[in-house]
Every structure is written in C-alpha cells, then in structure tokens.
Length: 198
Image (cartoon, rainbow, N blue to C red; front, side):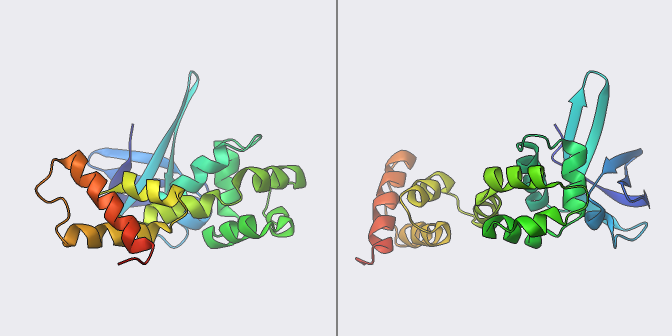
C-alpha cells in the first residue's frame, strides 16, 4: 500500500520514529539501530510496511529496502511476528545478522536480546542463504531482470549475467527485432559471453 514516505523527523523514541510528511505526522515503528543517529528536523525517506488486522493498524519503517526485505523474511519464520522481527533487527547489525545466518553461528544469534535458542534455530533453518541472495538480487540492476534470473538459475553469477546482457545489447544484437525475439537473441549471446566462447 505504501512503499515509502519522505518527510522530516519531528521526534523519536527507542521504538518509533515520528515523521512529518505534508500535513500528516506518521508514527513509524522501526528497529532502534535504524533510528539511532537520526537528527530532529532532518529530511529522510523511510521504506514502509503496513501491518493490518481487524483491531489494529501499525506502520513499520526501515532505513532502506535491504532492511525491509530482511524484516519480511523474518516474518516467514515460525514464531516471529512484526514486533519480534523489529526487536531482532534492533539487536544486531544487518551485516552481523547475514554473517551469522550464512555461517550457521547459533551462538551469535542467541546473543541477540529477546532471541531464544529455539527461535534462533528456526531462523537458521529458514533463512540461511536467503538474506544474502535477496540482497544480491537487489544489488544487480538490469533492464532484463527476467533474463538475469534465468541465467542465475543456470548457475551463472547475477552480476556477470547482467554485464553479459549489457555487452550483448551494446553490440547491437537483435536491435531491429521485436522485443521478445530480441530477448531470445540477447539470452543466447549472453551465454556465449559467459561461457568464454567470445
């Protein structure tokens, strides 16, 4: 419903940021380490997610899309709700969280305030490899994202796939063809580049 809100910081607490956008002041629940360091009256863009139930609506916010993506992945773990996900993210840096999940570091996860052993184990089972993979996807920008994804599924690195497609397009491959045909030609040529045959 809301992707992001841009406004001025009017107040903050350990649990929430207050952002004035136009004539509306938003109360946005955020991880404490996303709030920390923000100055009053500073302008910023907050990426949002709306929690909606019959008896409650709450807006959650994040410093960037990477943080929001992490929050949404945490919600998929059995036993972690929105408040719990925000608390977990506030107790560990993004890089440390990704590193702990990638390396299966249960001890590091258990050290996060409010995160018990069982939930930490569930996080490892559910999220190992996912946060890094999602962030790699976000880091790669290409007008041919479907082709990048198809090449990645074939085992090629996403960044290299995007570069190969850009190189193929720059060479003029399929320039005079309809879009779908052009995609097919670019895909074939990208594989040639990636296989080192060109």
